[in-house]
Image (cartoon, rainbow, N blue to C red; front, side, top):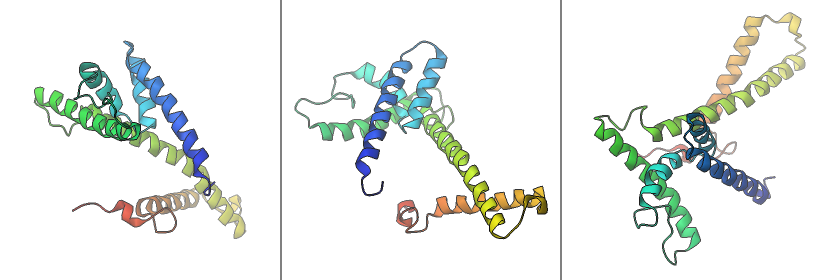
Length: 193
């Protein structure tokens, strides 16, 4: 409900916390399937870099000033929360940059585990959007056909596919350009030049 975002945020935080804790434990396993499942779980929470930072950063520097996942003595919980999240991302990127440099590789490669984590998140959420969009687009097509009195026996499969593609393209443009008032402000997509 738009008027009460609290319950929605609470459920999201709860599920994200459970997912991250589960992924944390699976990330310590020797079995490659369990480690891969840890990455998939973290991708759902937009926290894929945790796999790199926690295993190759936190365990090496635990309880030192260099460890973003260790709180400082007397540190406020809210300050620690944000410092830990941003510091973990920075740390994971640095760990990967150094690892790739030792191998003579650029940071901009698919061998970069941080980029892989982001790509996994992108693929998961793109799949979710497609999985939800197809039934919605089909429902819209059939509603328009019904409104205009067009039965399925009167339309060719090719025309149906073109209509589906057209509506899918329109939805994609709607998501990309986000007209103000429908999905948020266009300023949110402004890039720094």
